[in-house]
Length: 111
Image (cartoon, rainbow, N blue to C red):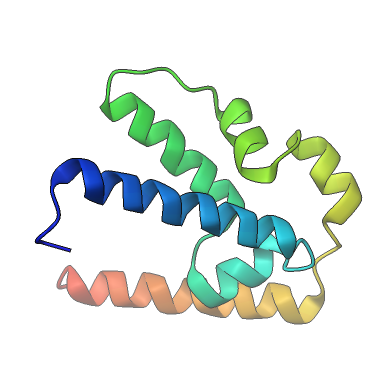
């Protein structure tokens, strides 16, 4: 992508992000905890990243507004309609993932 100008690259990145949001919207059965276990990010992370990106540009973006954009509806509504209760297996897998991440972080910091 180095051969692309900044505007084209930004447009492609934005299009890929919108495609990711559509993909997540089309796969509401994929729970946030599953995303966290597999990829160490979820829909809420995307919302937080949007808020952070806005702040870096000197813009204000409310977290709830960012979540509504990512979820395609208010988070409370999405949660009621689509979010299932985490199973003990999911919780254990997430905890193991977080412990492994923390251990890698400590090792990379020479602790």
